[in-house]
Length: 101
Image 1 (tube, rainbow, N blue to C red):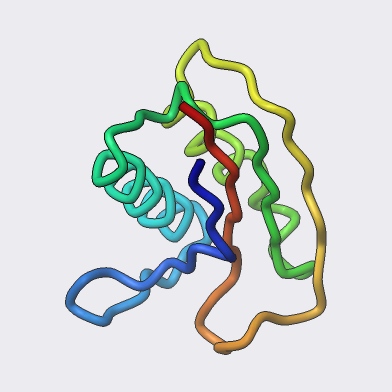
Image 2 (cartoon, rainbow, N blue to C red):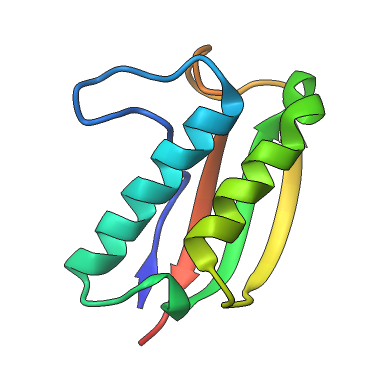
């Protein structure tokens, strides 16, 4: 099993994209890499919890599009939680997943 805490939108070079949709792509790329290191794929995900800063809800479509692109046809339980802020001001969203082989 793989349990992540909130995977944040920080790239390997330490930068964070400005737009929440771009942040979602970075998060899902990181999740895919974590799963690959555990010899899993996004098809192994059973649960997704997405946290989005409330003032970014107007961009929710791009956040969900990144999730859908990463999961493809696979369906997992998915919950969206709006929050007033995250631990770093630059972070506008993060995702926690549970995956099982």
